[in-house]
Image 1 (tube, rainbow, N blue to C red):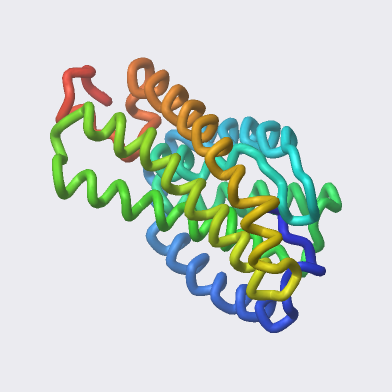
Image 2: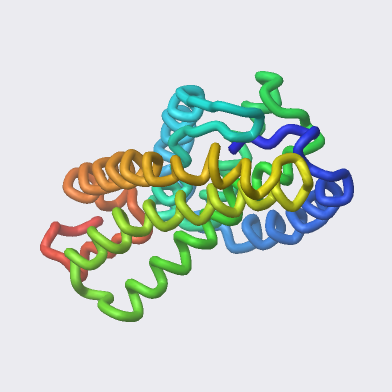
Length: 221
């Protein structure tokens, strides 16, 4: 999913740059500063782990790489604001390592950050609205199913971006790339769910989306 400058039209790159600015402003403006001041070490440690996971990837063509995304995990743990900042850190590392060009920084933040974070947030809101006090629903749908839906939709959108840009044909993408989505959703869901359940059991105060007053897991005090 790492898109290089050859895969995106110049007008799309400029549009992504302009659209990212108000999102960043909103993220900083609504940043949970008090929570972050107490758990910034956990945030940056998670970013380091994701850097390692992003480096373990497989690919068949330019822009068609597979790696653990982690956007659902970041959103569930830290909220959408810090998740956006976390993805920006990950994409910045890709630029520093010369894997992608700095010009497509914003476009990659959108495809690997803004879009999956938005999908995760929508699914989580639906879970909270339908059954806000049921841990099993939160566990299986809010975490596992959420990660599966997020990675599947995000990869499909990224593939359609490459089709719309004229880089690859629809037939080529649907034959070479999108069928492997089904191989990506299970590792994404497993790693996200495993990390979340370990954190909830041992350190629920590190997970912003989890309110342990609703469930019998002790207190965040």
